[in-house]
Length: 192
Image (cartoon, rainbow, N blue to C red; front, side, top):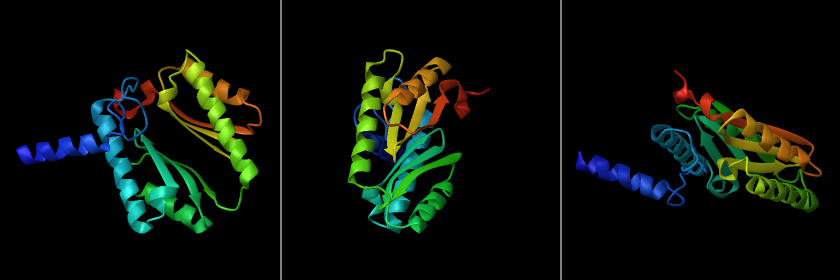
């Protein structure tokens, strides 16, 4: 029994990216999920990342995944459209998955100028969320692909969700905002 407890403790220590942040990218001081939900999401993310790395070592660096309440968000770049399909399939095969959002792009479909604009849009939105007192910027993963902004995270209430989307729509050059923002009350284990 002590071995199992030690193994679990080591797993959590190594899976935390900082003292207060789990691998899912959401700061636990603002995270309304239970510790059990956070553990489940972290395990799903680690499982998917390991399977991706075993399939192709380059995916370890080129593909990022986030998991919130069994919902997987993928981003990054691949060489061929078939790779994007393969990665999406692997995400859907992850035990416990509820949905998969795919923002993976194909290399060569965007140039340096477009990539620079995407980085600028993401930076402006991150700054706007940090400065906005009605939003908890740490609860969101932001990705901009070809001027389309993907937002993945947890809002404490409907007002915060609306505020985050409004901030994204205010940014110059944004063509579309694609939110995957879940309310704390929508999380599966908070429902009775």
